[in-house]
Amino acid sequence: MQYTKLPLSVEEQISKLEKRGLRFCNKSLSTKYLQNISYYRLRAFTYPFQNNMDNADHEFVRDDIDFMDVIDLYVFDKRLRSLVFSEIEKIEVAVRTKLSLYYSLSKNDALWYENENIYKSPIKFQKIISDIKSDVDRSDEDFIKHYRQKYDTPLMPPSWMTLEVVSFGVLSRLYKELIPSVEKRSIANQFGIGDEKIFANWLHAFNNLRNCCAHHSRIWNRRFLVQIKLPYNTTSAFIPRKKIAKIRNNKLFAMLSAIKYIVDIISPDNSFKTNLIQLLNQPNRLLSLKEMGFPPDWETLPVWK
Image 1 (tube, one colour):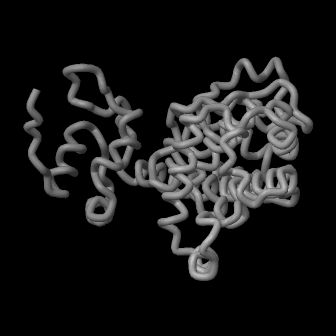
Image 2: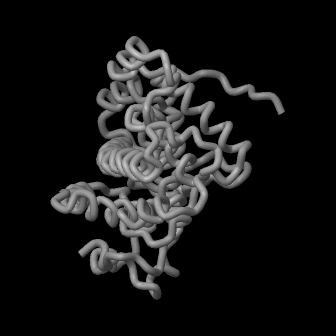
């Protein structure tokens, strides 16, 4: 099938949305928004309120929605992404620190990450090393430049430099592909997780969520491709076993609970819950906590108390 849709001016976009049932109480202000936030980007926030069946014209299923309600939901998602991104940053920095510290001291080797014997697969080892080298080569950090200017060998910097500049995705894969060991378990334990496979899954899920935030993708009612595994046994209070089965692990609430759990361990005086509740309590006609996977009693769960 050939794509035949023609581009629409902002005025035509408004007219099209009006015909579908969206209200525009302030067309002048709406025009300014559409000149700076694309019609297609906002489509992600109108989609849940439209008839999207085959052969339908995407008419709105409610007749009380104004364009500014959509903007309110868009702004909420933007602020939520900012909050989540900030909390994941804390986790990312802590993982970089502990991974380098534990393995460097245990192996007594600044370049332990180049040892193929500590990885599960030679093929994946080669891919990880290639990605690490690429990230280091792209880095414009002064400490990397200084190392390259001062030292000829070894070619790669020590892990406490290298792991500071690799992407979170590479860091996540690095941890996952390390063979089971005292060091690997100890790192997971430092984050309150007894199972290193669960912790590897959390890092993968956090990286996926982080990338959504970094690329300005909607997270409000998203179904995440990387489903987070919720453990029954944790060193600190998390979610009771009987409640875990009722939580959708491809929705944001499951992610937020895991983030909250770890941030409480590495940053006990954090304000994540306070900031989240403040954001959730702001007036927003279209916001549904259910769409993010929040259970009705979410604030009573141990991790959120």
